[in-house]
Every structure is written in structure tokens, then in C-alpha cells.
Length: 225
Length: 112
Image 1: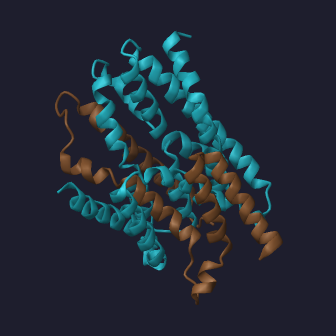
Image 2 (image 1 turned 60 degrees about the vertical axis):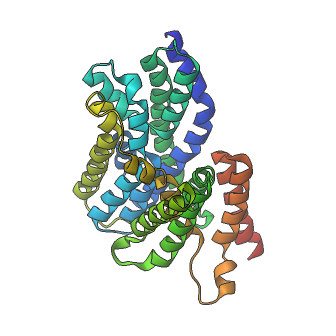
Image 3 (image 1 turned 90 degrees about the vertical axis):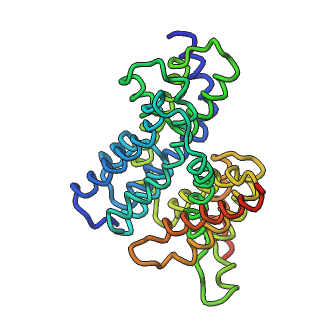
């Protein structure tokens, strides 16, 4: 293994502590709503984006219209436009096929880790380091989902294991409330989602998210001037 | 429980997967033609994580009950509040899940 690849794998190790429970919960949630093991693991391989997977699983379980399931998941993943734009200059010398599989592996964690490392160590081989981080996260994600499917099937309903899903989001939400506008976005998004919980077609999450984004923009406008 | 056939489920999985890949590849693919993201889009995207995550969390913790007391004394909300405190102090996913689940079990099996 080359040195840059190995550094990526090692640097990703502490992140895996967060990936493992997230993946387990995703597998448990998928089994819980009646997805087959193949569908649960296939989703992790094809979509490879935890928050959107959990939202899609929940909406599928509530028999929401399929268009709402897809739209909600895509809105959740829109944040990756930022990562794509930010990391693109580092990948520009690679062939298109290489860039495509690097893009497929792009996650919050792989982005954050690699960008920090590129800024820190200019001699790093971009692709090898990124692959070390991103591909090891991919592997843990797939295996963790599969384990979750197995574990989830054996736990009694009364334990309320599905409560781990909002807890995962909560753990990600708190550090995302970095400044006042983003806190406003979160409060508005949450409040609207609660009130809109009974909106037809399970549009509550989408409506709440869009309301939160709008509130954040309004709040930032006040700050910027 | 899902009340749909395998074709619908796989269709949803593939549709989300393709769209998500398009989002991931967008600027990595375009770089050279477009190097900068429009500022407006950038401003908007800044709020996506906080807004989306809150919209995912809040309805799972708060169910509007008939009275204020019924709404506040809910096991999910109380356990969520404990987990939120841990998330804030530690920023650790595992610690947050563990505390939240244990709090839920204590409330469900021992207290409420």
C-alpha cells in the first residue's frame, strides 16, 4: 500500500467510530420497515449517503408517494454541491473516469478530512489520500448496514431501537448550528416540520427543510448588512 | 411497513442514487468550464444541513399532544433533551446515541 493511501485509511479511523453506529442504525431501520437485506445493503452501495437513506427508509415505511421520497432525499443531499465545488480544483488533472469514481465516494467526512489534509500537506498525492479515507468509509458503511440488518431483526420492538435514527441526526445537527443564521434555520425548520407532521403525502419534512433554509437566508441578510 | 413491490423500492433506490451521484459529480465534472459556484447558490446551500437535520429530528422528538404537559412529558422529548446535551458537549455520534437510548429505556421501563 502506498504511503498516502495508508495515511488516508489511518486518518479515517477515528471517523469510523461515528460511521459504525450510523450504518448499524440504517440497517436496523431498513429491516424494520420491511426492506429485504439485499435492498438495505444495495441502497447503501448505490446511494451511499446516510441521512438521505434514513429519511427515504422512513418515508417508504410510511408509504409516502415515491416522488416525495426521492425529492426529500435529493434535497438532503444538495449540500454535497458545496463539497463538489470545493474539492473540484484538486481533482482537475485526473481523467473523467477517475473523477467519476472519486465523486461517487464523496461524503461529508471524506470531504472534510481531505480538504484539511490538502491544505496542510501540499505534497500529498490527492487521489491516494482521498481514496484511503473515502473507500474505507465506503467499506465500513456497507458492512455496517449489513450487520444492522442482522442485529435489528433480533431485537424486540419495545426497545424502541428506531429512536436511534433521530439521535444520529441530533448528533449531526448540534455542530451544524455554527452561527446565528444557521441556528435560526434549524429552529424554523424543526418548528415547521413539527406543525407540518400531518401534512398530506408526507411532505412535512420537505416543507420544514425549505422553510428552515428560507429563514436562514432571511436571518443572514440581517447580519450581512 | 412498506406496502410496495420490489420494483418500486429498487426504482426509488436507483433514482436517489443517480440524482445523488449527479450532485456529487456536478462541479468535479464541470471544473474547467465553470470554476465558481454562483454566490446565491452558495449562500442557500450553507443552510441545508441545519434546516434538513432539524426537520428530521424535531418531529421525532415532539408530538403535539392535547395539553402542553402531555407534549412536554413525552419520553422521546425527554430522552432527546438528554442526548442533545451530550451532543453539544461531546460532538460524538456514538455517545449521543448511547445516552439517548439509555435515557429512553430508563424513562420507558423504570419511570413513566
